[in-house]
Length: 220
Image 1 (tube, rainbow, N blue to C red):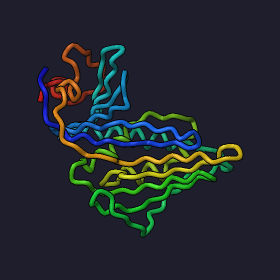
Image 2: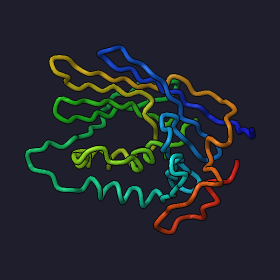
Image 3: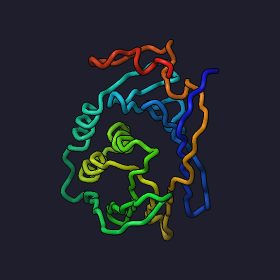
């Protein structure tokens, strides 16, 4: 099976209470990236062409969307009106910094009621600066209350860097749920070309004109 040399970013997530932990990887090569925690339906991030391809292994289909369209659609999705009594999340960039894997990371804090989410964002040379904004712009809405994140998402889609460490706290009954996420390794490995390419047999279901379909499929 043909392989390519790739940067593999390993991210560890721990959850309390319960002391649960798991890891996933992000594979980066030839101007593309894919997160290993997305299985049957996954996104192929294409930095060279500034677009994201959504791949469905169940229906064997794909569609490619330019980043500009994703940003427009994301902002439209979170622009819905909410009742005045629903609080909005706020993001504050603090002056705090810390060194993570030799990179100067800056702290940003998201607050929404009792929920607090700290992000330590840094420009690591092995992680394309467009990756995190692409992830934010292309994620599917998970709740009708997504508009509470309008200010936060707008700011994060302008970030040039990646969260090298994150810490979240949320009241959970009489306890507190705590989630920590951090980049624990960045390695160079040989990976199958199929990890970063859409199978040639998959059908393009794009409903709007995009770049030629052959591009995301072509082997690197």
